Length: 366
Image (cartoon, rainbow, N blue to C red; front, side, top):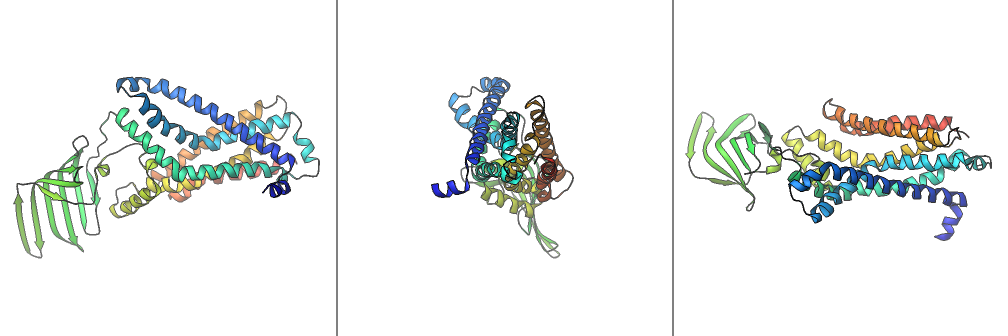
């Protein structure tokens, strides 16, 4: 292994990789401290009002908060880190000897992309496996401590399977009770059963729904039978209380297997949440690619020695960071509200900034 590293990694490669990863780790630590301090100042009243324990705050909320935002900001933190140490190298005239020693700019980029590949691997596995687990901790804490508003949906239409449709006029999350419930079953285009109930309640112990005071109408051609029931009836309908509740970032807290199952259900039910879930799924795989794109841009704009030191490249980098975040958020809005395909939307930021990176690479000093 050492022989392979010595063969393919020269002294300058090791030097740049150490600077790259060291600056990234330092910048990551600074961002972590700043985010936690600002978040504590913002939510201190909520912590005191709900009498949250230190254990829940530290090992539930911030155990989910810190990984989520560090992973979300990691490409941008990486971008700033690249600009910081590359601009410093250029200001100290360390890059000129490298490029004048018959080393191409592509060869100069090798240690950058080795380092960004390591960060890409970490970010990829964090997006797919770690972040959904830590997000579940954060979302559960936020729902119980921060969200005082009623998360219930109203006027819900849902398809349970190929033949069964349900409607719920209103839902009360605290008691897990829905009101004005209607269930309809079809055989092709013909309705064969219609069940109407005043209320339906979820039993979290048995994991079943109890229908209260309902009428059951069976239709067979021109023959109809109407049955009234005053007693409660247990059912095993394929729906959960979560289907009638709205929580922020709920899809980001789902594992890949759970997310895939919900996508399959959303395709069948047509609840209008399919686009959100598809965007979340594709985003987990595509977002880590921004590490390469922003690394390319960072090296291209900071490898030239300019007057004023690292101030100008750093300023440009901060502007590009905010621009990338805006474009990434707009891509989500265009997908959900504008009807753009989620798979295309998640690629838009990287395609736009990838084109910018290629242009800057062509213009970079050789």
